[in-house]
Length: 441
Image (cartoon, rainbow, N blue to C red):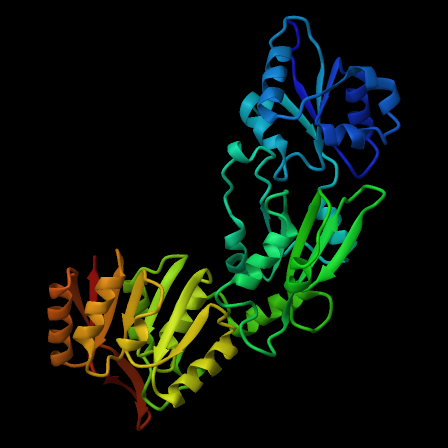
């Protein structure tokens, strides 16, 4: 039985071809390459022996159709596609696998450009998050990407270290400006370290260059293609940033849910109890991105929990009392809550110029609950409002205001008892019940 034709995808750019890759290239009837990879392959010792069999095709759909036609022939004609680095790392290998099946291709990778980039700056890369912003050369036909440049601040807040494949549209300057333009710059507070960027240009070429700088410095510079961007949150404790980040994460439980009252700076008694806060955040059904208002924020405990659960969410804590504003700022520093913004003012006046919310929590209203809900309804197209009511009067006001402003409402009563030791015996002591009112439109 005749052997089925199979496509060989060979990664190039950083090392000489291995024995298997070299055999495939030299035995191929056709070697496909883009213009850029054609120039790269000219540096290989194998080039002279096979240069007459190289065909340059720059557009991926045209490449796919050419390969499909070659593989359909009855006479076996070995085909090699030259790819950049590791073809299965945000590369053309995935497309070839999808087009021709796992059994129809053989992939021989080189080092990836990201692997090379981290090696150039002597940083571990096993704890980094990787994304590709390389959408293709034809802007009108650019493929959809899982993440966009706008997602980088959120991803960096979660991970502390990123490797990014760029293109001419999503270039280092655009990435740097995205960090600088973020509503809550990273890091959020003075003394919490800084963000460092590394631009690794033309890796593997004779003129490769590594540039280190802050986002402001990178935004003011220009860079050659191709390049890889690395971003790290530098805590100023040595070059092993990833290791520092992991130790801080263990110490502060960052990225987890469930802080206790005694971990927050707060005025005595003026904090949402742990169990009530947990139900409140659950009822909010927080989105990963968007805008969340925390009105009458107090110590900021709900804001901090929301910010930790959803680093991509813009959290706005509104509070009028100076002592509580100081507590919110202290808690932001304590828990590195970079996506919290503090607004000093009374609701509803302080809300009028804020961006439209997707979620709202009202922990304190200063007697203006009806006016606050009315303004929220005017600003909110669709979303959820949660109100914590300690009294029947507030519960009645909340339900009436929600009904009057187009929200569908539901109520849950939370009764919590906590154990305490009295005369050597463990007894249960009840806290005041709280009504959690949820409105949705």
